[in-house]
Length: 113
Length: 113
Image (tube, rainbow over all chains, first blue to last red):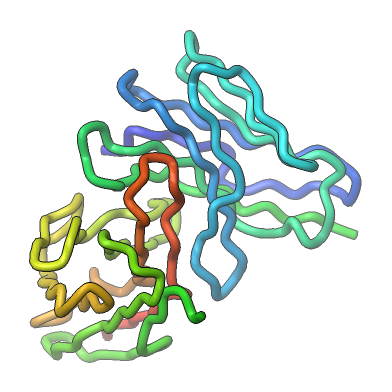
């Protein structure tokens, strides 16, 4: 039972465009929301993360928007570049666990030249 | 400084065969994890080890066993491989502070025929 639901499964965007990936969560005890980026043949790596006491966090061209009342958070990739082509996972820590993360299903992003 | 190293990178097994996936980290992490990645399913936790000498089941432990050999090494064993265990397996380490990231290896791609 996936407690973090991610959409879309894949998306294609032109260079310079905006990529938007959405995640919805069920457990209101989640209090930390990371996004991981994975390139082909590599393991996932932390891209950006947010805590629910802020509504937005920006790092370079990557922005997380957080809507606590709707239990949703999203990743925006501005001015998308071919080097951003990767699979992106949203996640949330399992409450009262020890470093365990619940991952979304993943979104494959392809940025065309 | 290699981070998290997994061996082998690729493996093909016949149904019923056994094998051990190896993972070693040089980041001095106390906690280590084994995830499997399947299309459309994201990453699912198989087993984890909060510290040397302890192991616990994750979301999908059936058919697997683990050994935390020492602080550096955490192995995953398939005693009798099944086609349903065809997947990409990732090992990860965690530093232990709440919002520190998981550090993943580059994975083992396993095919069971």
